[in-house]
Amino acid sequence: MIDSRSVGDAGCFLSFETLEARRQNLPPAPRDTGTLTRVMSRGVGGVRQLLDETVLTVQGGVPGDSWGRSRSPDPEAQLAVMQEDIARLIANGQPLELSGDNLWLELDLSAANLPAGTRLAVGEAILESTPLPHDGCKKFRARFGSDALRFVATPPLRHLNLRGIYLRVVQDGRVRVGDTVRKLPCDA
Image (cartoon, rainbow, N blue to C red; front, side, top):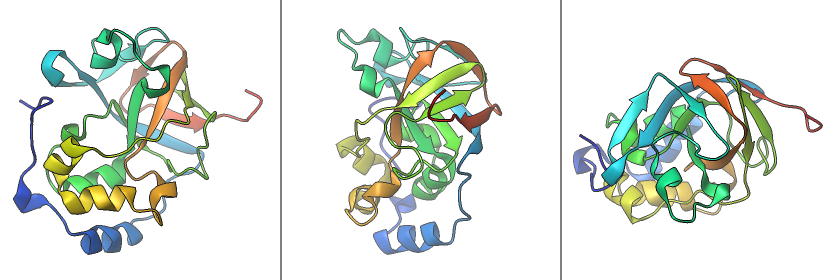
């Protein structure tokens, strides 16, 4: 069981240099149309539950997730999202659920591609990127190592949003693993 107290396997932690070399060898992520690869809810105690499908809502985000149970949930941090290939790189064989994100996408999450306010159609839902930075923390370091935390936070790479981004739900809708993710035009 993976929960909010889970830590990573230090034998899987990669050095900064290895992370960066492997990142540079990844194929480019899709920029306009991608795929929803995972959906997760963080239950009581941060217990992770992968979902095949769910209905994302403006009021609750992912049903049952810790965000919706907060006394004053920040709408700018409703859905924590990570790019699938970067998550796999950092996890290095560990379960991706360790990161605690809600959604994993095969899509370029860089600031240049998804600036704040960008809307995405995911299944039946419409989501919007928020300006809140998604930074690593001491839990991220405990799960993936100090070099992974430095990798996602180092200024020359920060614009790539390697730790991910936050999205908020602007239109309720059902989403399923495997759904297409489409970047919407600015006037949508």
